[in-house]
Amino acid sequence: MEIFLQQLINSLSVASVIILIGIGITLIFGLTGIINFAHGEFLMIGGMTTWLVVSHGGGFLLGAAAAVAVVGALGFVLERSLFRLTLDRPMNGFIISLGLIVVLQHVVIRFWNSYQKAIPQPLASVWEIGGVRIVAMRAAVVLITAVVVAITFFAISRSRYGLALRASVADQETAALMGVPVRRYITGVFIYGSALAGLGGAMMIALFPITPFIGSVIVVRGFAVALIGGLGNVAGAVLAGLVLGLMDGLSAGYGLPEWTEAYSFALMILILLLRPQGLLGGTAGPKAI
Amino acid sequence: MSLLDIAHIDTAYGAISVNRDVSLSVGEGEIATILGPNGAGKTTLLRAICGVVKPKRGAILVSGRDMTRLPPDKLAKAGVVMVPEGRRIFADLTVRENLRLGAYAREDREAIEADIRRMEYYFPVLAQKRDQKGGALSGGQQQMLAIARGLMARPRLLLLDEPSLGLSPLMVKEVQSVIADLRKNFGAAVLLVEQNASLALAVAERGYLMQSGRIVAANAIAELRDSRLMRDLYLGAGKSRLGEAAAPN
Ligand SMILES: Nc1ncnc2c1ncn2[C@@H]1O[C@H](COP(=O)(O)OP(=O)(O)OP(=O)(O)O)[C@@H](O)[C@H]1O
Ligand SMILES: [Mg+2]
Image 1 (cartoon, rainbow over the protein chains, first blue to last red):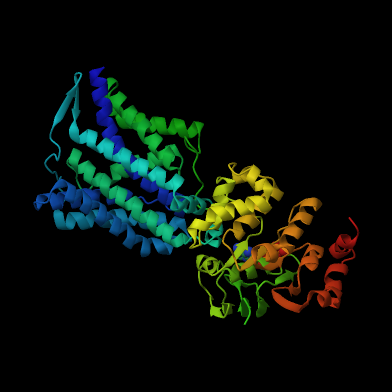
Image 2: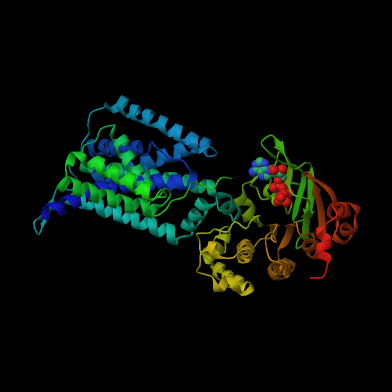
């Protein structure tokens, strides 16, 4: 039982990072119809930014803030340039984001080589509660994600901006007729989704060493979570992230750990066969104009 | 200078041109209508006025200010709001959320809740259904919601695209009386596009006839009603909507 709880908390921390990525993917898809495959690279750049700051003597918090800012800015610049050209043809957005994977990876490798990077554990303590060993950093990652998810939910369901976002996801043209500056919302969602990926990268490197190739592993997970939850559905992404995280924990603890990936993909296939629209139902992308 | 002046507008979807050299005006508080057969380009013109379609040529002035090619949210801010064809209610938002969204462009946030209550007073069904999803309303109720949502912006000019489409005769009457009272109750001018000519002729003061993308007649409504073009358009085909509607019902 103790082992199980330990595994669960460990896998929850990884699930947290995946959930942050999944939220970004699902939000951007919901509003623009673009699946940003480079979202994993955004996370990688967040991790590398944190590493740069920390290895130059900055603290982890400064590194994480820098990751959020740098990746948020990257999202802003890319949305205003490359992705803006693709709004009328989301298919072009796929191609651009695939190309971005290569470009971003190689820029990082060119300047900082392809070896694994690590930082000292920002929170080194380990708590022992009733025989369960909880690594403080992992608990912190889960907590931070929970706060981010709560804020995101609250903003989407309660605020004026969230209302306009939901309306724009449903019908951009009519939302615009009601005065919603839809283009600005698209930019905002790109920045927010990217910033979350930056945060995810900072938390990732606080947990494990990362290489410039981490993005592809993560984006596949993030995409699975967005798809299982229902593309465009933030609550769905969170739920799916938790389900996959639990699955990881169980399989690592009780099954054959080397099959972890296979279990989660089997689960994804099963869920999508039973519910093609995802666990909580997604959008089909923005309504065609 | 009127509230809305459009001058020599051309529109197109890609290479397919729709409107050609369209000019018209709507005065402060006036009710004007554009009549014309299916595919004439009425909806396209309204979409151009509120910035969804960018005109190829010509100018759109709101109270003399050039608003040509500005995005729809800028026009909404300037008080030009469209109630689109087919209502386009946000099905997953509640009735109240739909109304609140209609007020998005407004600066005077504190007055919004009072206006929502005002809409619920004028359209009692919206009060009854306030917490239900927009998609759960009937067609007629959705039309009332669409008009109320447009009014939440406190528009100076409301563009109504076929508000009677698909409604029962009773609902059509209700829509008609709502439109006739828009100026009195909400101070809004109206540019109405309708297939139901009898409704349009009954409420409008000024009419434009559109055919194949062009304005072919423009006149005060009484003159337009009796014009030959109108007769050709609506009586020529033998079975006339005008005739139908003129029959007592
Ligand atoms: N999104 C679009 N893309 C391409 N062509 C379009 C589009 N919308 C309308 N059209 C074409 O433009 C022309 C004018 O259409 P529009 O919808 O403006 O007519 P309308 O007068 O509103 O007709 P109706 O009375 O049937 O609503 C039609 O020939 C139509 O096929
Ligand atoms: Mg039309």
